[in-house]
Structure formats: structure tokens, C-alpha cells
Length: 284
Image (tube, rainbow, N blue to C red):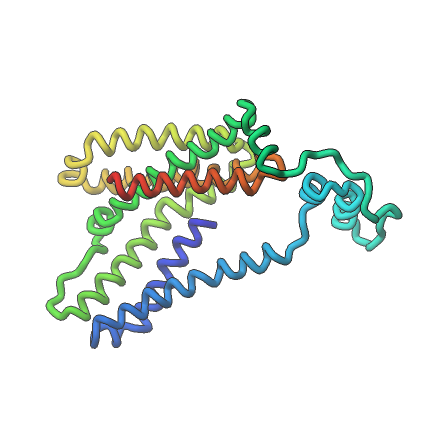
């Protein structure tokens, strides 16, 4: 869904700019209202997600592994699969499963074992490496927007120049997203179960490595003498980021950890990614 989120944000920006066109041309400070509205609209999906996360029932796996209630977990599965409302006669608490309770000492004990710790290390470093590339690529968006004719404009009147420049950026980002980001996500959706998470992630990192070497080694010649080739390589980067680690790094941490540490493991992995984003922005 991240690809659709990126696409939706550009569309919302375009709509808001169109609504404020006259105000921006008359007074460029009206742009201040635009970015506030765009950010506010972006909070709506987050609030909807928060509502559903607070109201949806717990999964049977959580009920069994964290609440230790096997009967309730069994009944939840049965009620979901059956069309009637029949319940097992033993639907009260009971048959507790013997699973360690989440605690700091158990966390250290569990991830202190190499066979478990290496999984957390792998998901964290994968996300860290990905976000260095992901946010590093974003620094070159201006070059691509300029190459496809959606860069800043040069009108004499400041308000008109601001409006046209922002509109061009929004349209250009829609084009970039549709070229590589959204198709990459959908190809992943098509193959993630049949091909598998690990092969897709390894393939994605491998292809991205080759593309980065090619673009890094010939960055200036490509930018100055062969912009079409630069655009093609950039599009392939976007595609294989999303048909690859930018999807699997989200999926894998949600599947490989025990229930009691699934959120913790996913959170540590995601935080490692944000550290990579900081490295990309500060280092490059």
C-alpha cells in the first residue's frame, strides 16, 4: 500500500494546489495553507488504521501464545470458519499453553541465542541497507523531474512561478510513481507467495546492487549526455526496490518472530531502517 500512499499524496497535493491557484498567484504565502492541508489529509488514513487496530479482535495465535488460552483460540477459529454461531462447550478460560511470558529477561534470553538473534540482525540490517538506498534515490528526484520536463519554472511573477513549480513537482512525482513504484508493488503481490519472500528480497538486493554500480560509475556522463538512459535506470531502481526489499522488509519481520515479540522485532527492524534514512540524508 505504500506505493498507493505515495501516489495519493501527489494527487492530493495537485488537488489542493488547484484549489488554491488564485490565492497562490495573488499571494505566494498562501502556499503555507497548502502543505498544512496536505499533511492533515495524510493523517486521515493513519487515524482510520488506528481505529481498526484498536477495535479488531485479537488473532487466535495471539490469544494462544500471549494470553495462553487455547480454548478461546480454538473457539475463535471455529466461529470464524463456521457459518453458524455454535460454540464449543468448553469456551471458558482453560487449557493454558505453556509459553514464556514476554519480559526483558526472556527477551535477552531468546534473542541472546544466535539462531534467534541472527534473525533480528538480518531483518534490521536489511531494512537499514534498504533505507539508505531508498532515501538516497530520493535525492535524485529533482534530476528526473527536470529531465522529463517537470522541474521549476521561471516566470517573472513570483506567485505564478511558485504555483507552476509546485504543480510540476506533483505531476512529475505521479509519473515517477506510476513508472516504477506502483508496478513494482503489484508484481510483488503476484509473486510473493509463489516465489517466496527470501528469493524476492535477495533478487531485489542483487539487481539494485548492479544498478547502483552502473549509475554510480557513470553518473555524470549519464546525466550530461544520456538522460533517457538515466531515466530508464532510475525507473528500474524504483521498480526493483518495490519488487524486492522495499516490500519484503515490511513482510518478513511480521512473520519470523514469536508472537510475544513480533511487534518488538518489527519495531526494532523498522527503527533500523529509519537510522539508514538518517545516514542517507546526512551522509549524501
